Structures are given as C-alpha cells and as structure tokens.
Image (tube, rainbow, N blue to C red):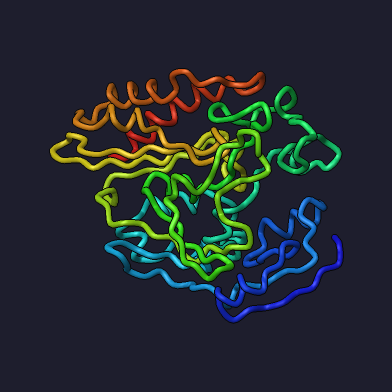
Length: 323
C-alpha cells in the first residue's frame, strides 16, 4: 500500500470541493481497502465522507430516499424498507456477510468494482485495470463472467446484489459534482456496458459524490422475490441472481419487473420478458415462457454456457416465489 494522507470533511459540498484527481472518497471501505492492498487502487489521499452524507432513510418525493451513508445492515432491517420496499432488504441480505453489511454504505455499494479474478491479479492482462493490456478472461477462466452485454475488451460482471433490486425498482441516483450542481441519474443509466472503455464502470462524473438514492412508490411490496445462485450459501458472489416483482389483480399480472446480476457489466433488466408477462395469468407456464424470452439469444463464453439454463430456471423460480 502506498503512503497516503487522510482527511475528513463536514459535508458533501466541502468533500467534492476538496477532492483531487489522485484522491479517493472512503466510507465503509469494504471494497476500496481491498483494492489498495492489492495495489489496484493507489490513491495519494483518502477523503473520509462518513460525516458528510446522510445516514437516514426518509419518505420523500412520493417514495423513499436512502442516504448514501446508510449502512447495508440498516437498509435490510428498516421498517419502511421492509413494509414498502422489501425487495431491497431481500437483496441486501443475500450479499456479503453480516460484518461487511455493518460497514458497507449504500452509496459505496453502487460503485464497487468487479470481482473478476484477472482484475485482482496485477500480473494478468486486464483492460479494466490497465486499459489496452487485453482481457485475460475472454479466452481464459470465464466461468463467472458475462453472458450478455460484454465486449471483446471486457467480460466482467457487476458484483452487487442491492443494485439488481434497485434496477428492478427503477431507482434514481442523486449526486453532487465539483461545480456544486445537484444532478439525478436514472438508475438504468447509471452503470454502463464495457464497450471499448471497460475501465469506466459508471457515469458518475469525475470527483462527484453520490448523496442519496430515490425509489418511487410502487405496488411491488406484496409479491416480490430475490433469488441468488452461487457456489456456497453465504459470502459468495452470484453465478446468477434474479430480482422479481409482480403487481397482481385477481391473479392477473398488471405489471412485472425482472432484473439479474452475475450476467453483465451492469445490473440487467429483462424488458422483453416483463412486457410478455403484463396481462397474463400468474402461472408456472407463463413464468417459464418469460424465462425463455429472457434467455433467448444470449451468447455464453467458453466456460459459462451452464449459466443460460441456470438463469432460465432462476427466473421462473423467482417469479413463482413472488406468489
């Protein structure tokens, strides 16, 4: 770990005003500290923002606002979340360990880096870590890698469980930039696909700071499920995951939401499958058809073809678990 200075700030405006290009913000540090130990992130300064951002969950804008400093453990147990947005709690509880959830911040969860093994191995080529060096996973060990939305520059997947639920619920991300401008980005547009710039995970402007996440009021609090398939039952990243939510009236689906993790560089929405489900009866047959629509045309890599059938089964099962 290279030497670095450490400073605290009083509020978000001062934090972004003081941030330099070679500095990094730190909140829970559950991802950044690992990256620093591995010599992947090498900031010359850390700006502690734990006292700069809200750690409150509040009713706002005909929905709910989650402060960027809300710990994941708090998010999973808050009464407002559990009663009106339980999909969020289900996703958070599927991730990491209790110890990490106690430290990890909501804002930091959105910008955590991939867990691709080649990204963490500084002796391997990785365009995300060192642009232009190549993608070792493309023809290497790619069992955990993407099956959709990837490029020949990067096949890494986004690791977050929370983000899959936020994608399904059409959340939005509130930020403040160095010009002190407050900007809102739709969650579906916040993360990006690798294209020819895989080193850029999201559309957060340079030196900007996430201040909160908004979720509009929705009818998905009664029938929702989060399913995560992984190599072991705890403290493991998803092979595939599914956030599913249905709005039912007399067993007819009036609206549906489906999103997945472990399949792409960003949380992935299955819009065509959602459209198919609207107006249908909530039956296993329709759930299986929706799963088939979602997985049609996916292009696995050499080592992860099993993800297609796994994903198809996970989507159908998650929808059934909503009932």
